[in-house]
Length: 332
Image (cartoon, rainbow, N blue to C red; front, side, top):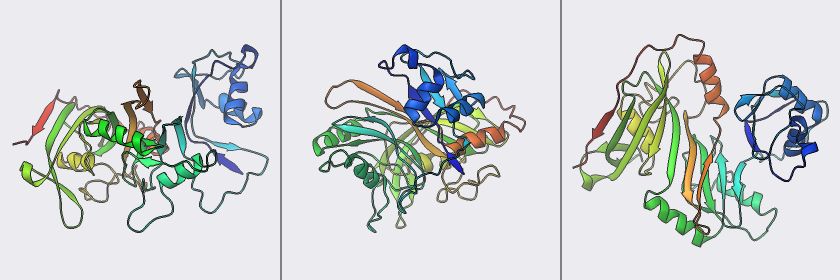
């Protein structure tokens, strides 16, 4: 049998005594997997320490060291517990306290139910998880990601905290960074798209120039990598309108791979066969409503992104140098 691990980043806690800080031992205790499996992962180059490969099972770690374990099929001997029919993989918690939690949403999962009252949503699954410790606990949605998009989301545990966080989003305070894989070669190294988004009768979004016809939408992008016929971009949101990134990048003529709605005719690629959009909320920064401390969380790349990158690295890279910056402004 096989068990499949998704990528995980672990910070070595300070309460582990020095004799137990060997890499294999730390992985065993923090991941809850057998020592033999930990050694197998280490020896098969699936583990990095502070972003450097480490193939020494007895390597001594220090508090604060960052361990990253990549997803890989791992042979196991014992049987695994049978999951309930409703289980669709675990939700990764990046942070959890009495006021809020920060989670990584997988793709192909609604953030909240629609009018059809779907049973499987991120909010529902997170609430069931925290109710294991407190049966009266509740979860309040602060912001959303589209069904086919993955990445970091913050959720509140009270209406008051939810309102405080929503006020930060309304004031454009949170730092929201996404990564997206786009069709074709984006010519400019960076740019800003600023216009207004309206909605048609089919709930599709589209850009307009008249402020009275839509909501102001501002998207900043920067090219991270160009391949032969695709581009990896980093996107930062100044506003957070529904489908904003998808519409703006499609307006550039470089839609997000896998997008079934915006420029579907161009949003295909031989190395992206997945039933999801190549868009991932990579990081989120905000101010904690109670402590007022700045917080920032990063979600590792989904497996599909890493598989695409490995596939494209085998092809000849583009020699397109790019241009420095492009501003597309249509505000009246």
